[in-house]
Amino acid sequence: MSTARPGSPGASRTCPHCKTTILESASVCPSCRGHLRFDTDATQGKQASVVPFHVEGTIRHPAADGVWEYSVVLTIRNDRGEEITRQVVGVGALKSNEQRTFTLGVEVFEVKGARPSSKGKSLR
View 1 (tube, rainbow, N blue to C red):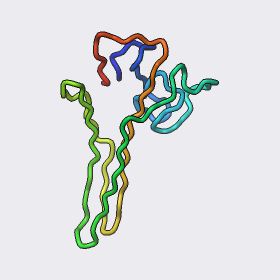
View 2: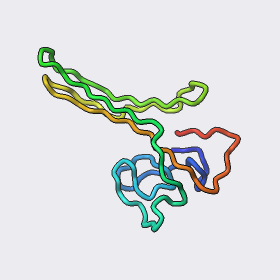
View 3: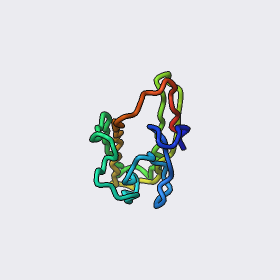
């Protein structure tokens, strides 16, 4: 969970549906897509999201090899290179001729009326 105060940019909470840590300001969970509250302005005081980072890749298992196992590991570092969080987000196996496609996207939102803080906020 975030160390940010409730109501401040970056504050987080747990989704009541899937138990994922999400932004407190979210009206829809980005993980399970469950609705958390009704908003006529779906952005809750935020400008439209921007996706400044998006990567997609596919792994195909060749027919000649045995079964491959995989772990999808996500690491987030701050501007000094210090690790903020590291999570295994998925594991699995690939049999001959199977493939998996992995997509990572980072959405950012501008919060209207928020003042920049002089302290860095942790994502934990």
